[in-house]
Amino acid sequence: MLVKPSLIIEDITQIDLAALKAAGIRGFIFDLDNTIMAPHSGTLEDRIAAWLTILQVEGFKCLVLSNNKKADYCQMAENVLNIPVISHAAKPRRAKFREALGMIGLTATEVAMVGDRPLTDIWVGQRMGSYTILVDPLIKHSEKVYIKVLRRMERLFVRG
Ligand SMILES: [Mg+2]
Image (cartoon, rainbow, N blue to C red; front, side):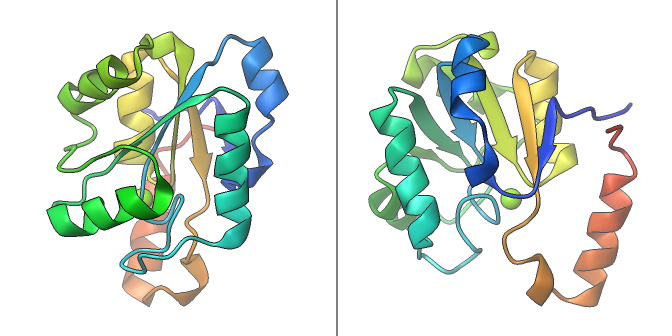
């Protein structure tokens, strides 16, 4: 098993929206923690908030698919982001991904799955046949050492 993201970038704001639109992408399914918000922070960086606004102005459908199991946290994130959040997603399982597609009314090939974890976020998108975008985790510089080691190990599954 190898995970092969369609695109590997540092940060979601580097996504070329015009190019994706030209390629037939009409929506985004985002991971939450470390992709669009720092974990447990409940706050959104201004530059990411601005970028999410551009997405919606450009007409892209957006949804957040999180493995986080804390319903109140996900509800708070939904309020902050103004984007629907599905919690308990159990990525890389596909059931909630299919539910997400139904909610935004798009097919798997019309969405880009964006996340920081190869074996959950990218793997589910790849299995569904979606365009996949791997980003660097937002708080990588402040993480504990063992988490950094785990992340490096996980990246061994990625074929760039
Ligand atoms: Mg994440």
